[in-house]
Amino acid sequence: MFRKKLNKLLVCIVVNIFLIVIVFCVLNIYFCKKDNKENFPIKHFSQYYEKEKADSYNFAGERYHVYSDNPKKSDGKAVIVFGCSFAYGSYLNDNETFEYLLYKKTNRSVYNNGFIGFGIPQMLYLTKRPDFYENIDNNEKPEFAIYIFITDHLRRIYESKYGHIRYYLNYEPSNGKMVEKRPLFLNLNSFYLTRLFMTKTIFYNFMSKENADKNFDLVKAYFEDARRELQKRYPGIKFIIMKYPGKIDYDENHQMLKNDYYLHYIFRTPRWKELEDEGFIILDLTKYIDVNLSDEKYTFPDGHPNAKAWDIITERLVGDIIKPI
Image (tube, rainbow, N blue to C red; front, side, top):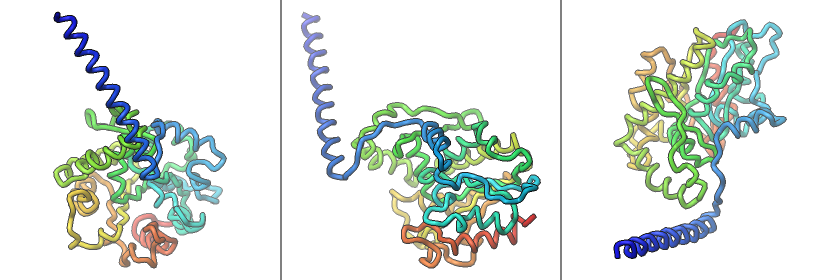
């Protein structure tokens, strides 16, 4: 009798699992068509890195290289730049990018490590790879590392963790450093319906006011570990975090909504001083630059900086911090 009941229970469980899978697949197809999205396999970021490294354009275009025509190199005064499309120079000609302008105004070699669509985890990934340093001339010994930070980079930490941008990359604090860890059930995010659910529920929770300090702790840990990795090779390197503002970052009266609280908090929080106290150079461009960089005179229609913006920023940097050689 007991065995018959057990068999019925097992059959019932199997049938229900099968029905759930069928419903999931049908809904996934529906939402893919409705939102014009797709399913895709989730791969580790290393596959993107190796693919771009082998590509004839070298990492996100020809810009992943050193700007320098100085035969004597920079004599230990080079600059490494990290970030997303802002650092890469989307929509700009090669001679309009932040890196190129900085190189022309300082005569320093400047390395562009901007990855379009990525952010802080990818910076840490690079600093942990031995071959990253092979791309830097042995005589350079960079004096500065610059990270161009925008508020969306916090969201991209979680997107990278769960592979929302096709490639996953996740680090978590452990014993005072960041350790790479594969998230549980990662492959489920190959399905658009799962990613949609994550975005509408879990991500909003991550970005809520209740998790604001926890999120800053995570950002802080990433920067600390990246600098630690750089200092293993270049003990005296100075790390600049340049906070590039969007429109809402100039509006102190903007009402903070629950689902986008992180946009405001991560930029404005006074906790950036904790990194300053550790020796980081924090540049809030809403205060450091006299013009409103979100004005249409200094941006492309989607908010990316134009050449005028980078010209103003590099002029101020050269006058204050990164002196010509």
